[in-house]
Length: 294
Image 1 (tube, rainbow, N blue to C red):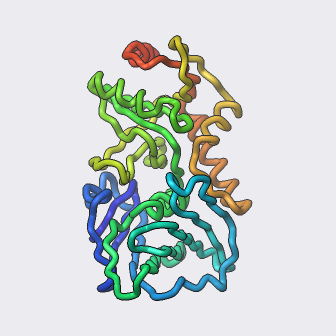
Image 2: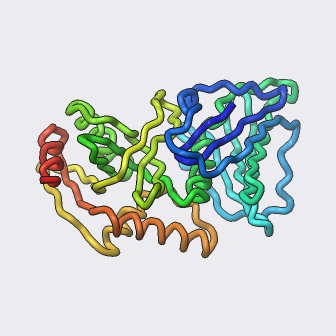
């Protein structure tokens, strides 16, 4: 089976003990645009943890609440620039751990699942949570893009991106636009990538709901704030860039990776107007934003 994410193609294979069933990824089996990179993804099970003796820990994701985040994860790197992502589950019904080793030079991702019982067959979506999201951060980076916490909509051939921390109004804003007839690209997470010299936003498989692949150019960026009144103010320069960057998913652990990510965000925000958007949850804000094009 093949899965397509923006300009990336994943060719999925598995051994007998892995039952790959497309759930979140079910509608991502065809490309929206031409494929520029193809990775082979090989899934297997193992009785013991995958050895990472040749790797060094580079980044750590600690669980702050074992009820809402029942896992921890780490990113490792070795001298060959291979990346390993290891997830340890606290109370998964079938899985103790999952390890993905990404060889970017050969375009191969080897994923090892350690089940509770060695004879268990593990049924998973290839981009099961949280491995899918962690992989996409690195794959977007290798594709010249990045992942951002944001909702995005397309209306009258214009694409609007709304970024904020959780609970600030990304989904609310997307819903207001949907009620006005706009196409929702996604209401929480966007893959941002430059295609033919224009920055575009793509949706990605989500664990909470099923959605068809969608994309749109990004024509304006809005940084959301809840308010009793609607107020939009353009912000420019490094202030705009750093506020956008603060909402990106950025597992940065080396100088060149950080530099590359910063340059992409700077280019993104230099080409697209950025606005501070204080809003109340009614349709008036939609009309105010539409008037910015006039």
